[in-house]
Image (tube, rainbow, N blue to C red; front, side):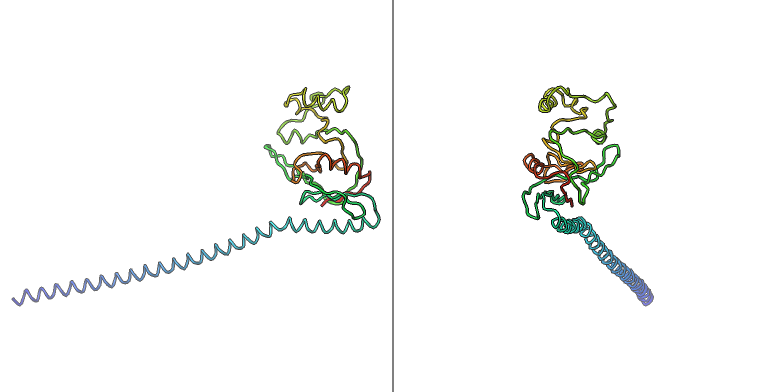
Length: 260
């Protein structure tokens, strides 16, 4: 009986030692896993803080970028006001102010507002499907009316076709409207006697600019057009019919036009 008891005690002792060793090793593994989890949590917190910091920096840059055009427009507006003060001292006639940010015009005389309304101005950088790029921004600064005319034609520049990925017509390829017709009859002929595909190839278009135009030089005109209140033009200033006529009647050649 003594031998089996000794054996049993020995077996139990060995089993207990193995169990204690296993428990100790499990404790070590649990502690290791706990350390890994804690380290992972710390790294997650660090990454989260970095993400939040980067998001804040990005938001700050975005806010600054968004504010730059407004700040630039405010600075240009201030400069125009200073130019206007200097202008009024020596010029008591009609002059025009064009606000390209708000797309509004202000016809003034001697500093007093005579007429105000919406206009359309340049749409900025434009690219066609072929990758050609144009800057159709209305140029800012002080300009003057170079010349005026009634019943004007719009002579399409080459970019009209290039912007549509078309090749400009060569001499003799464009469609001509009979010059034996009056200007009003030419408008009717253009709209009623030509198909839409034929109208594309008319270089000298009657009526497209309205009944009047004022030339500010450098290809920039004051003329009739749609899209008033927005940046939609190829650099010119678009006006409604009544506003265009009022400005045409008021502004003489050499009248100042302040654009900002």
